[in-house]
Image (cartoon, rainbow, N blue to C red; front, side):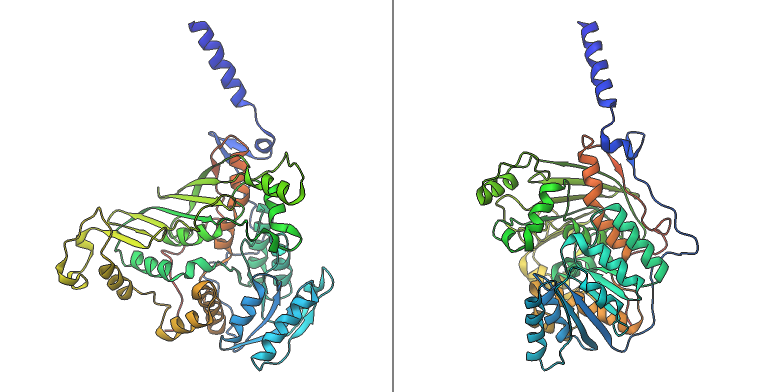
Length: 469
């Protein structure tokens, strides 16, 4: 029996030792898959805290006017110090609809570009544009961002801004070479609850943050048909892993000061089988899909250099209430947005002046609603003055967070300040698309997360916003 057990164990060990195709493409050290980090090209420097000359007016060209683009055009109509110079979409009717928005607002007509797949290049080549705002499908984001920066433009790219490590490094290298801003349009970091919680964290209310969670859980059954040429379902059909991680990653990484004193070090990912994706295609077309790649649910655990952890989830296939799973676990407190907004704190962390009727608090239950409201008022984010908050809620865009995102982008460009999010944020938050696939395809093996700053992750201590005063 002992001999049989030994033979079985040896056989299993040999089987596990056989490298998969994906492992052959990466180096394995101490059972962790090491992903190549290219050397910084000669003469380049990092763009940590990058500042550029002030722009009195931010002249903008919009590329992609399908689902997200028109909303961005509408928001920029209301942002002071901007000029909409060009509108571009492969479909001319989309451009015309956005032109009508400008006309209705009493603004001059913008230059129109449409009809061909490379019409967007002409927008990037104009000499009267400062910022290219990209809201196309994922497959073209990185290519457009690189081209725009090469032609002297700052770029703001919808999520995810890059889908492969190759695209990520191209964006980083181009931003470093051209000294142009490359920001991902991650709106969820500007949600009012996330903004307030981040400020509370900066004030030490939660003690030391140990663990954070984030996700994109959003059943898309009612939305698949709206993606032109079915591109989003096709992407899930042909790609495995967390292909849409940034809404959960952005707020989580800001809470942990990623590349501002800490860095993601290792991740492990796993997924369920693909069930609803193939079923949807069969229902719509009758096709039996045998090779659908992306599982219905993908879960990723990440450990940082400083011993913190992150849990990130992706699920766009199964019936579930929408959730970004935003959670913070600290030594002295807890915050959560889903399914309800709540805080839990040690009583010593709450000023008694903020506790009506001197209610008794404890560290194992949610704060009473009136105490929560008092804290959220007291620790409102420094970027939110009353005028901006009221305008954001009026103009809208996911409850106002889209407007705050665009407003802050313009504010920083006009004042020559570092942006709230840089190209390394983009890289870190987008990297899960390929790194999770690599882990999953290798039996959920640990994958070392590259240092996208190439040594500058500890250069700045703590996340902060830039202001003129």
